[in-house]
Length: 453
Image (cartoon, rainbow, N blue to C red):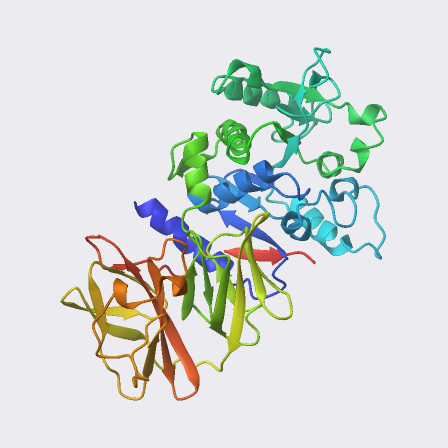
């Protein structure tokens, strides 16, 4: 459990610096071993390949590195990810040989190049989802040498004078490790050598070949687009773990390595926090639109996501929340100045007194009651009582709140908002249902370098 708490602390520190362009890519650094090897993992260079960027996202959020180091960029081409596009401005993975400064992605490409060339980086994996199933010999239209899925790609056999320069040998081990854990035999992996230096003009433009030309071992990893996202991510993670073991990187993870376990990990602990966590929204089964959200006018840049694939995009009259290539919800704001004076909210929950930090969630079995605080007004969204403006000191059960005002589709989570005069002081969520622990989910925000456009 200690390593999970430590990982959360690192991630919270990392993502807290996200108050820049919400579509910047994010570099997360896992591990603290200056003498150990460093693996750089990149996902999302093409926005329509969710297996790759979700696998990188899980690596960033659900692994602890106990020896060596792993740097993760799960969302390199974030604008294309949220638009489900291979590339809004062309294929980013064809921009590493030459690129004019007028290209909209020039800064992004230059910054990822600088990370690749960092002296600490020893090897690079670029995660993709590819068409069909690569086979060295023609089998049919889906399984043949022109397909990319289920392959580990090298540009050449080896790279001299490099710590991990035996590219073919490492890729062969990774292929074997994946094939020892196939879900069905037809999912077989193969090594694909593009022999780029022999005149493959397209591959000369790629990220991996840029790395190779600068003395950095690099591999492409392809899961088949024939699979759903969780299955693609499963195979990516199998390959990732093989390369980590081969590099001498030791790790722990907090999920079972199956497609089901990966899918659960992808969707666990999804929440957004605004204004230093004073307003936190649980994304679990959230409604498609939340209205009258008490936000500041810079909310589109002042938010903390619990995971790097979670972001907020300002659309003028509201904010769309994306997780990877999925639009989760739309926030329709009601703008307020913020008041930071209140740190906790006192409540009576099922007959027991508790102090809930602002921004936390409280589990309620039967009923709750907010203890009055002098100078503050409470508004329980969805609860009304004639003639009552401050809803402190009232015992409220689930039946007293209109289901339509819950933040989740199941009608179990509700907003308890606190105001001081005309300023918003923060919010606590209450979740109705059986539980042994009343106070949950008050994680500090996820060391990050945010890089990108």
